[in-house]
Each structure stands twice: as structure tokens, then as C-alpha cells.
Image (cartoon, rainbow, N blue to C red; front, top):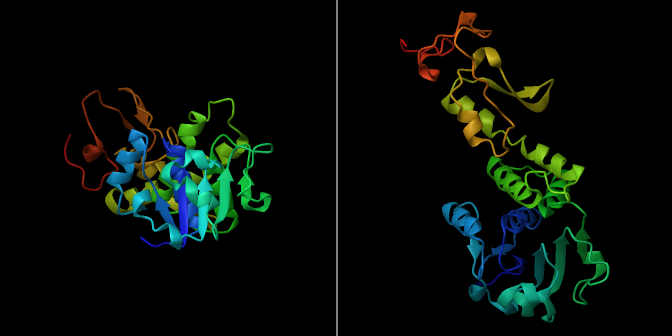
Length: 262
């Protein structure tokens, strides 16, 4: 395969690096994402499941003489690139790198300081999401899901000591992906708004919600949307009715216009 631009990362690719490659592709849309060699199992299975949305090329299939720009994510070291390492020093190849390690003392000679973009964030995806946002590039619900998974993996769901406020901000941006609105609008009861005061904003309309759980199941951010159970005898403020002790679900909820008898 001939490609003038190639996105690559370290071997033993984890989800943060994988998500960072997808984010880098937003900045270099003509570049091919290269994934091969040792790859973490969760990354391999996710990519195989969504190969139509994240097409990748194997390092062995890349015609080296066609590459003019190599975009590295989550590493700056040629010896961590497996069989792609020789591209770093190939004549005529410009190397650009994105990393969340500063490399003040170990920047290789094949990368100029002007071609290195770094941050001290817990996840590299955070840096790339920030750049994507600054450039005004739209993020699809699927991309937001991948980015959020990458941030969660490298920050321990924002619990690691290396986590920064920027990681939380990037995750918050991913929370605006709109998957909840789409699934509620198309397959449920139109109980989630997409705008507020003329701005993109997603909010559950409690009085319309039937508790089907679809929004929770598609949300890429744990605990972003939660369902609160009501104990028997409590009054459901949405309907004004007392909660029964008998089993019920969204199909029998009073807010469901097609409700069936419980």
C-alpha cells in the first residue's frame, strides 16, 4: 500500500495509544493508521469489531518509499515502533510526534523540537482532543466513545495521581457526544434534549423519561447518566403515582404512550 502519510504508535499498543491514533487521524485525515505486531487484546478485539469505522494497515503492507510524513503518537523512540522504526531515519520522511511525556533530555535527532507536541496530561488523548476542539473539528459519537475509553484507561477513570484537570475537561467534551440523545430520539421516547439556550446541551426531561436504560447503555462515560430506583410506596414525581411493589419496566410505565397493563 502506498501512503504519503502514516500514523503509528508503540508496540504493545494500549487503548490510549489506539485512541490517540484515531484522534491524530482527525488532524491528518489523509494519513493511514498503522496497527500491527504486539497489540493489547482489548484493542485488537475492538478494532476488529469496528474495522469499517477504523480501517488500519499492517506495517508489512506499507510501501516505505511512498511515506513522506510519519505521525507518531505516545512515543518518540524508533526502537518502540517495531518494523516501522527504520522509517524515522529514512531520507525524505518528516517525523511529527504527539506525546504526553516532555522528552526534554531524550528527544531523538530525527524529530525537531518544532515537530513535537507534548503535554503533562495523564492521557495523550486529552492533548489531541484539546487540539481537535481548538480547530473546531466535529467529533462523532463513535469517536467520542473511543476517546473516552482511551482517557479512562490511561487515567484509571481519573483516579491516577498523574491525572490532570485537562483530562477531566477532555472527558467532559466526550460526554457531549450526543449518543444518549440519538438513541432516545430514534428508539425511545424523545426524553433527552439536544440544545439549551441555543447551545449544544444534552439533558434528560424527567417527566418524559420511562426508565428504559438505553441512554445509560450507550454512554461512553461511566456514571454520566444514572437511574435512581424508587422503592415501593414512594411517589413518582413524574407521574404523581405511588410506586407499586410489583415488577414493572419501561413497557408499563405511565409515561409510555404505548404502555401495556402491568
